[in-house]
Image (cartoon, rainbow, N blue to C red; front, side):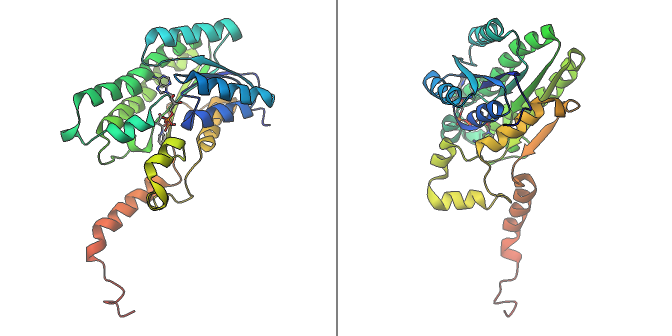
Amino acid sequence: MSERLQDKVAIITGGASGVGEGGTRAFAEAGAIVVIADLNQERGEALAGELREVDGRAIAVRTDVTESDSVATLVAEVVDRFGRVDALFHCAADARFINSSDRRITELPEETWTRMIDLLLTGTFRVLKAVGRQMIAQGHGSIILCGTADAIIGIDGFDSYVAAKGGVLSLTRSAAVGLAKDGIRVNMVCPSFVDTEAQQEWMDGEQGRAAIERMHLLGLPEPIDIGRFAAFLASSEARFVTGGIFPVDSGYLAFKAKQDVVEAMGEYRPTSDAEGD
Ligand SMILES: NC(=O)c1ccc[n+]([C@@H]2O[C@H](COP(=O)([O-])OP(=O)(O)OC[C@H]3O[C@@H](n4cnc5c(N)ncnc54)[C@H](O)[C@@H]3O)[C@@H](O)[C@H]2O)c1
């Protein structure tokens, strides 16, 4: 076990499944005391129990990031129990809702927009505010916000998701500036597709999966891959890193742009017959 985060207290929102679960496992692997702050307390408890069985230190605190009181109670409980919050990896989201409900802007129901912004952007505000206050009081901390590569480029049909995450991206930079004097670093990780349970359902079988895999140079990242990068950002090895927006995307941003151009140019390119092959 690496000791990169030995005895550090880390809150992982959405830490019971998906990318957040990868964060929970990676922070625990690095020696942190992990607090799984998830709406799904049953899964949170099960994961915390599993980690404790292999010498990890983890607890689950049911948290709803759409409720300020719930977030405030989480931070109070963690401070009461462990005395501080050294790191936050904020991953709370609802991939099934995003995949099934988001639309391009002209077909987007206002209630979808409102829920997306409340969960992903205002949720980030609530968590940053409560955790930030505690980190200011203790004089240090590292915050990692989970974004998406799609906040950097556009993606067809996901307008409210991209808008919410674009807000998180801007907030990463302004919070990094505002909190640096208090010893707090703020960074954002931007995965492309991560091989989570919810994404496996959405990729819809082998053909869908193959299409998504083609957009990645090194295969699909697992949740733990994103979690380990976040754990690095939380550690003292990254002590000069703040305000950073980091794609952890298997080359998706570089390659997808190229692929889109290739697709657009497809009809103009000579076929192998025309070339006489
Ligand atoms: N999975 C991917 O391919 C992918 C790609 C890019 C970015 N991301 C980002 O990763 C993060 C996590 O996404 P995911 O795909 O793992 O989602 P997910 O739906 O698989 O998991 C999200 C977790 O958050 C919890 N949660 C939901 N609502 C909550 C609330 N109100 N309060 C607290 N917890 C809540 C859920 O119970 C669940 O455990 C998001 O920020 C998402 O934008 C994911």
